[in-house]
Image 1: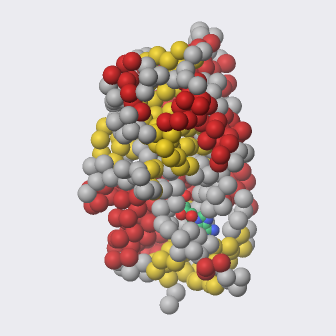
Image 2: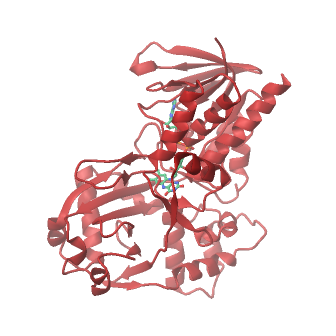
Image 3: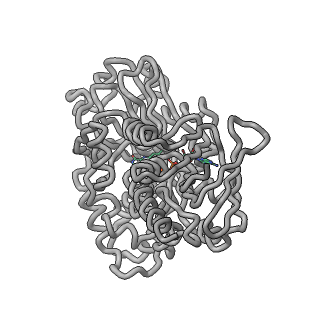
Length: 434
Ligand SMILES: Cc1cc2nc3c(=O)[nH]c(=O)nc-3n(C[C@H](O)[C@H](O)[C@H](O)COP(=O)(O)OP(=O)(O)OC[C@H]3O[C@@H](n4cnc5c(N)ncnc54)[C@H](O)[C@@H]3O)c2cc1C
């Protein structure tokens, strides 16, 4: 039987839409390319680790009612993060109490009216900022948004103070629990979920569509038809044109090329027990066994951002976003690990070999070359602040769009979730009119 809605992609946006629509008695099919749901939420529990390793989303950046609802349904609590910031330059590691106030002060100077400036352009127009303030703000914005500051919209940063005005939280369970809850709802409400089913083509006309997909790697495509289709593919996959539309969506294609698509590298290192008392750690950190370690920014390092959120667990996450990530993205895993250890050794002013002796295990995921993501997450591109809204616009009340790239809060789990709920509402309205 033909579905009312066929959803492509079972990340949080696709799952949230499927849960909403199936709850209202509509017939929903959901196609997912991977052998798992959740997309860019990837929580692993390797042996030897006493907590989940998050290789995709980890933080709740502010959040919204849509996410709060799922957290409640899943019995997940969130804990506010009190993040201390450290700065490491020329062999000196010191705490920066002024980090967030400084970011907020700088971003507050962005003109209220959108002038189409990138963040780099905005910084150039701030003669009173010192070189070190510029470097601090530029490093932070590029790294957090995963894009070059020459492309990131200054105006879009103003709205939330580039993250400085948001509270950050951590869920008390692996992020995967959010996905499990949505998947549970979908299955209980009769959503037909196809895993290992990458979609390759959408043939459509007003009021109907047929989607081709390759189940379990089979060469011969299978087809499913529906009254509406919801596309939730990551922007990287849309940019690569991996799934064709027939007839083609020319205006959307042009827009997709203009939107900001970020890249990041993330490694998670687990050290041997006792790491926080290692002789090379600053006394203040060692004394508290890593508690309040928070974040380190080390501009100039290959892997310049580090954090540890669960001390005394001896786990540190390394991060490089935007242009800084580019050279790392070309490395094989062993070389990436060497580079990460080298950066961290410089931050702690210890020999690489000595730090290396403390290392017990590590994990990473290459989102850039992952064929079902092809990058990290979206950022607001200068001169294209309304791009996500335009991408979200339905085509002839038949093709609908969700996913973090269409969200109010780009590049976040809560934004992706809300986009799925928004698209579900649009679809319900469209179907009710027919
Ligand atoms: C390294 C990293 C760190 C992050 N950290 C945070 C964080 O701390 N906090 C936060 O809020 N957000 C974070 N994010 C962003 C967050 O993970 C995403 O915004 C969100 O998970 C996106 O959900 P989505 O449903 O839009 O897309 P996705 O989760 O990417 O879902 C899209 C789905 O489509 C599938 N798909 C792709 N191609 C096809 C095809 N041809 N056919 C069928 N299915 C297909 C994919 O496999 C995927 O499951 C991070 C992302 C990354 C990569």
